[in-house]
Length: 343
Image (cartoon, rainbow, N blue to C red; front, side, top):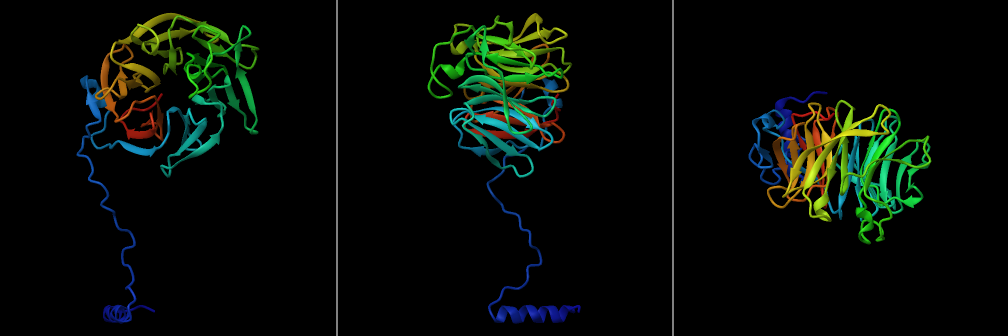
């Protein structure tokens, strides 16, 4: 039965007379919320005009979660549409869901895991500070220890990791998780800080290089022929911070052609990612006006920044189009849409 206009108005009046609210013609109402920032937001900082090709005029900086102690190690899972990241002091792996924007605990008591990645079979690989090892989560729920010793000595505290198409992985081992009883267990380091390769055929990892003071974040070059590693030397040495590139041998078990791409006296670099054009998007720690993400061309030219109100530890590109920069920053996680696409 259809109601005419007069009948509808009469029914509405009757409902109001007996104290009943009239039917809602529009169920959805927008909430004004906090006053939004004016576009473009101040987080975007252009240092080279080329960076204008990678920033979006109308993209806000979104904080999705806060309450961590030291958030680290984001890795994007395209099948599940989520990012895994670590809250190292609490020994938790966390999960940010792209569809809902919610953060939840993925795993607890995970050995103070730091860097994460997914291998080419979709398995999660995590660097743990204590016990100091590189761990792979198998499809049946079991775990495989890929590396925990080198030449009979315990690894320092594996930090960040990349997966190769061949099945091997490369990881950094600076030892940060062994300096205090906070992100691991305090102990003397048994090994020099170094970068290693390991795969299932090896009983222990192969040292690729120890020509770096504090090997920290690591990322493959988009062409797959090498990798970048950050040297956060200033935390323990009277040396500048650096981003260094190496060329990989065909089997991934050797490196050559060491090149210092970036040197800085005021910024410490940690986790990194690359876009398809080869630009390096690195976390930055240097105080207000520096904290956040700093972007360099493949040759090391400073292109621009994404400023955050907290120290940034690591980054990855996420989302269906791999154009959403996900940032772990001290106690919080942030995203911002970009005009770049992750490699």
